[in-house]
Image (cartoon, rainbow, N blue to C red; front, side, top):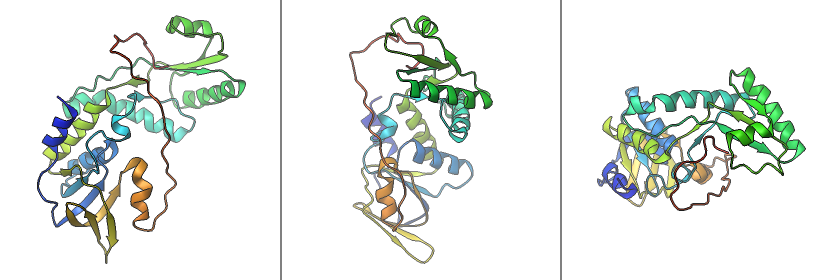
Amino acid sequence: MSLGHKSRRLSSNEALPASTQTVIIGGGVIGLSIAYNLCLRGYTDIVIIEAEYLAFGASGRNGGGVRQQWGTELNTRLMQESVELCNRFAHELGVNVWFRQGGYLFLAREEKQVARLEHTVELQKRCGLPTRMMRLSEAKELVPQLETRELLAACYNPTDGILFPWPFLWGYAEKAVSLGAKLFTQTPVTNIERGAGDFLVHTPRGTVQCNRIINAAGAWSPRIAAMLGVEIPTYPVRHEICSSEPLKPFLTPMV
């Protein structure tokens, strides 16, 4: 099923409601998962507003990696819960996201990178992860295609994984909409007015009054926050993915 077809089927063609309890700005995986979990708790008076189409932003433009190898305990613990979520996602939401735990292999070319890997490995071990430093010969056995001449060290966690991000997004969208949330794509927010205990969210499709706004706009979240005079310290970081011709999977871990 194509992305466009999914977006059209899930998105409402109706006018924006005049009022709602909660407006979620951003139809990525964060905004949609928040909507789904609110609906599970009985808060179904929700309007999700997406400026473009589903999977337009980072939720649809990523490599699908799910890793627990982070440099802070907070991120590591959060991602341990995320791996548990990914393992039960297909059963809970009825959508196969092809989650596969082939591990993550990190490589170091400089001494400072080696020191950072050694530090994070100890942190992750304290969190109960099987992350370990690995000799380059072991890394070569794990990934025979690896060129190790310029490498100094590697670390590996076999419980990290990868999934297909688009069904992950659609799963949350379909469930949230089925539970009562309303989803509007191609609906950019142009301004937000603060009232006495409520907000007016302005879009080209109309204005909706709400009691709560959840800013889940990702890279665009500072722009949304600025409409209410709030400055938040988030910023986008550009990554690059090279798309090739279709290939059969040949890497066990993410490298």
